[in-house]
Picture 1: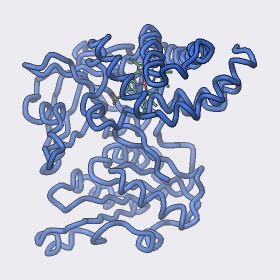
Picture 2: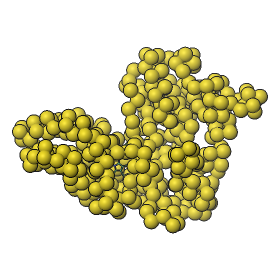
Picture 3: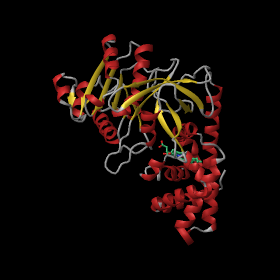
Length: 405
Ligand code: HEM
């Protein structure tokens, strides 16, 4: 454990580092990828370019440093990140590399203000924080290896079915090449997929939610093709999967991970809300709850631009026909003429508090949602305004986590 003087040094320098936050993290990633270009096989280049990841790692190091004398209080945060790390194949030996380059970046940016005493204290603190992550992740690797049908690193899967779900979303049904058992997962969890794109010198890893209930003979992911919009480039991996991975093709997967999971012990009404491809974990939860707990009242709300990009609509409508306890609502931002003619949706425009309060089964329920950031912010604000308690709210970001406040 750190001594009191070190703890004080750390706590008094956190605000200084936060002031230089962007400069330090930018320098950190420059150093990291110059000294260890092999890590570009793990990190998401698109997130790097947009600066979205730039702050997350360092901010958590600072937040952890502030709690250095009671790290157990940030364990839930550590676990969420550790799920992501485990799923990406981050290992104990990577931590000293990150630590060395983060410390070098702090030194570069602070210059003379970074005294030996300060740098020594940060080296010690980083070591303590890294150990917490390493231990939590070691346990997760062990669990996924020991679980029936589980595995620790990448496992080869074959695409046995490829199904177009909408103009932009396609599902891939995946079975292990080794023909052996397939681990159960919790609805809401995701897998990492690693691809080698011909002509590209790096491998690319992306995470996709599993979009069907656990317990099938396959895993299913449903991938949105991210086309280029304005100065936002097309998604390398999603386009590759859509255009080049066919039935019979092979994909490498890590075992399911993630802490955004359905509480199947909760008997209260369940509200599942999604925007766009945020639909995928919600379908897994919906398929699970309707099959295993048909008494539970479910409200399923999905927002899409219009009916053409609305995936799995027939499937959900069929479930609603079979299950009177399931209420379904479609919200189209810009319904097409065909949508209007078919009266294919229930709400036009963005979801707001007023509309939501009319369709929710009350506030004493479990609320789960996933979608683009503006969607998540709107839902989060509306639920709190309606009187829903924070403890009943569960959400997941696709991509780097952000604040909803
Ligand atoms: C993601 C923290 C060490 C690789 C993240 C995220 C945080 C974080 C907060 C974002 C999670 C999210 O968006 O949900 C930390 C902390 C570390 C640490 C506090 C040290 C104590 C490492 C190490 C590696 C690593 C050693 C491996 C070289 C990654 C990768 C991602 C990630 C690849 C996903 C980012 C992307 O590609 O967009 N980490 N991390 N991290 N971390 Fe770490």
